[in-house]
Length: 154
Figure 1 (tube, helix red, strand yellow):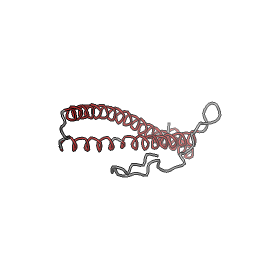
Figure 2: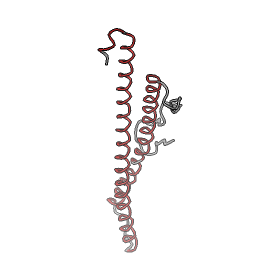
Figure 3: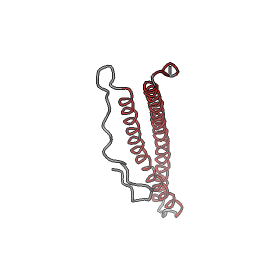
Figure 4: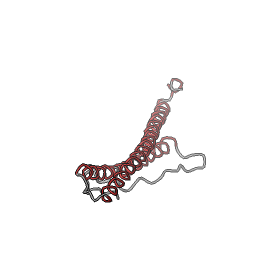
């Protein structure tokens, strides 16, 4: 196709530009799909962790009820295990922050791909290419570390 446009260098440049834009759009959409897959993996992992933490917490609570019934004090090992479990559950809030970041980044990538397609290839067959608004905030999560008690989810 490009070889046939040797007579018209401007047409060849436009064709190359559209081809490059199409390839870049494909890469942006593949990255967006990878982010969606990452989101599903994080969701599955956090659900499994929450189920295991809940199971462990219920068993520790049952052990404490048994100890209280026999008028024994909570052993330090159980107290430490409960504190560790509470910290682990707090760390699961990472999943919420990651979800927000992934959704925001996916939206930005999709916006870039749509704008690129519109600008390089023109309007669609209906006469107007649909491009969602660019997210107003550059980043939905201001947190960059996980410390108990310092979680900012929104």
